[in-house]
Image 1 (cartoon, each protein chain N blue to C red):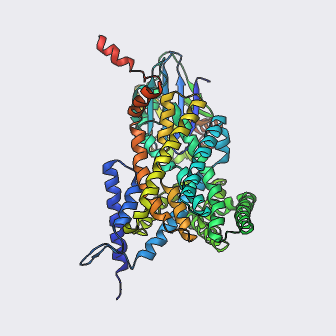
Image 2 (image 1 turned 90 degrees about the vertical axis):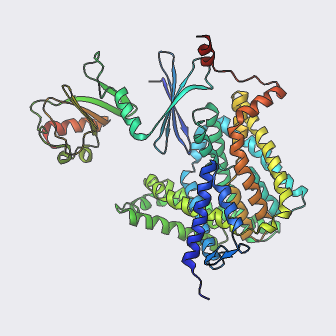
Length: 164
Length: 410
């Protein structure tokens, strides 16, 4: 995905420049203190931003979840996995025979054992964003898992077999 | 009479905190306020009953905490410092940084020579004048929401370049100043000892990195912090015994620890200490300056400020234009890099330790006071300044926003 350009801002954070296919230009600055600045630029004037939004860390995560389709999956897509550099989001459906069903995230030690993290659980009309450690894995739900490819794979195995 | 040292330190911290509050109220960098606060109190300050603002008993202790502040400031610089990053930054940064240094360093050398100051004093002044405050610059850019602008990359690149320059320059200069000799052979010897110490330390540090990694592999934050701070103090203290500035020792520890896996964890724990002791450093620097001794320093400081503004602006515009930024972007570069702060004070402190002209401290204090306030102001008003300059130099005017036009039409 060459449409995103990354630039280091030493002492401040990192800048991501996105030239969208629609022709819009978006620049996101991730500050080391957790703030995010999102700027919108005019096509023919790369110097002055038209508008900007500042988000704190929590807000930025929420918004990223919405944009990533975690809260509401776009209807056009069946199952999704999104790769961003090494980072992968995967929508994983818990099959009926999976050993982890009925256990909670804390006792499975998902994050500790696999490194991956479940950031949302979607079941029919119910959505749990950012589930806590006592959240039980329900049958037939879709889990949104984040991690690198290996971590996500071992997380899926953990869900299926109940252990690694 | 037994002094109430804890109460005195408490009062000192109250003054420091009040200076911080004022700085926040006026939305100006905290550095000039801390120096000013230190200058206002001190041996000449009045005593109101138990409120003793002369800090006679506690002065050595405040001075010592300020000393720790320098260690933490330099340690942090070492952690953040990266030649690799500078190389990655590219040719335009390298060219721009070199242009900047050539112009401003020679101006900084020329001034003290014109005033008839000796060589070592001139070298210190050149450093004070040519090194911007990367902390103030970064803060101003964030506050003004300029981080997104294209030329900000160049500004931060120049800061990176200067940080590398500071590290090398401080080590050479500390050898010259602290040895206290002036024969060319002695000077050469002093400089080579400190450079040799630096290189040797970095090489050994690289070799030992895996071991340090294992040593630091402790889950307890408390013990982890103790090990890091012990390393920092021991190396800095040892450097001093061989006439290398302790600040350089701290910098070296930072450089070596930056190579370990624990880099982020160290950075995390060191920041509060840097901020606390750093504040006391600026305060104690102000405390060491007698306001009545400022007379002789006023003109040199004012002239140095004007020369710095001109030299920085020209260098910034030249570097920016060469790198392909617009006239407005280049103006931003030239104005933003004028802020001065921590490094200028550290250099003045070094001069004091080496017993150079006592005039250097009030000079540096006034110089930093002015530029730590003027620099951010110029940065903020860059659009207005550009519009005035554009008329003189026939630069293109800034495009008015299209949106406004559309809004008016509809």
